[in-house]
Length: 521
Ligand SMILES: *Cc1c(COP(=O)(O)O)cnc(C)c1O
Image (tube, rainbow, N blue to C red; front, side, top):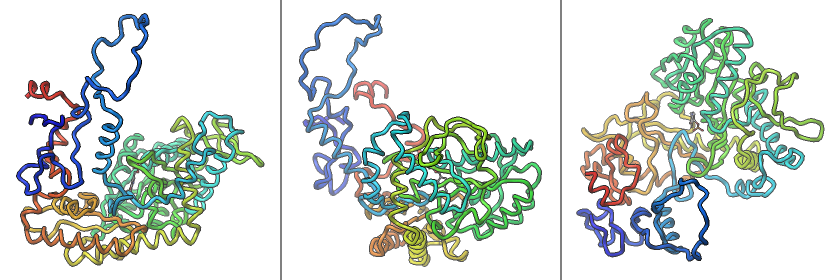
């Protein structure tokens, strides 16, 4: 399609054959936006620099001879470009975000205020520790509360995400086994565990064996205990699990694993549902990561880095990675090297250059202190209540495979059973976009056919949930009635339905000038 007069081309799918087609592709005040390379031209620039003085090149012939090819835009053009793009983004500050397993909940602004204090925000990891005592105290206090909330012995603060924390825990297990002089090579992973669990065990050099789930969505304890033996290093269990259920038998499982000489890794990414209510240490867990960017409300994804501290049992604490913060009298030190001592002579080494994400630590501690013990308990209770409200409000229109397995935790799961011939979970997800909701997680967990996983979180009001439930119900009914229009949803979004297979198989990642693109065709 040719560039129009204003220098950019309306997007095909926004104008094609729709009653709402406009000359520009804009809809009311929702503006279409082309790529920056399509708007800007090489001949224009937004700045007016004086001619650079002639200088002899010292690049030995390596200097660039061709134009760098960046689009030139004036300041208002650049501002509008990015503002228009930002309006096409959907985020937790804009509306409900039922993306399960990820705790897309409101991040209190108080956290941000604290993280921006210059004493936390404007420091450098190589600064002398005497000048960052307050920051180290924040890390130490957060560590204290994480250990207290989980009933564990120690915590490694440096891992940078949940999966990184899993690796930390597995490496601690490996180090403990090596110290015992035992060569155990198998890690058992139940079907109801998160996909990162088997990936982590394999990455650390273990061979992974699946343990089946019972029809009610929990670990098959008999199958698991039957497989224990001298070759089993341990188990990795997600609790609450990816079916949205609490693994009620975890203590029994831990006791059996310990009796057989193994260790218990618990994936604690779903700690949101049980914080303040259950201490994993009481259930015999040896290592568990906590996603600060989920349970403790620090922004993540496009919004920032993650942080996955790992709490450790007495058995694994000596193997924690370096560095760590330690209180010595009235000051804090950063232990950077292995020294002989009660707690640290056997560290398995170092996972990251520095000691973690200061901004995340500050936000998480702010969140914990501002909620208090009663507030954190209420987080768990309300997140579970909200998920059960969604589950019970929709189970008459959608198949809920675990509806008879007792209350769910903080995630409600539905399947595609009962939709009209040719209709799928994807159609429901796309239909929800037209209703103004970011879709839930789809096709996960894998044990449920056409899974739809909704995590409302505790920060949504009943009014917000009722609106979502109403929209979900209406879209589900259309999918059951075989409403053809749903097959091509979304109709109102800036982009229509994409060919996801083509996008995944043949992604177009580099912009080419139209002339070049035509030549390539
Ligand atoms: C998010 C999540 C992970 C991985 O955490 P990251 O911080 O994304 O690496 C692992 N397990 C479960 C259950 C999760 O929800």
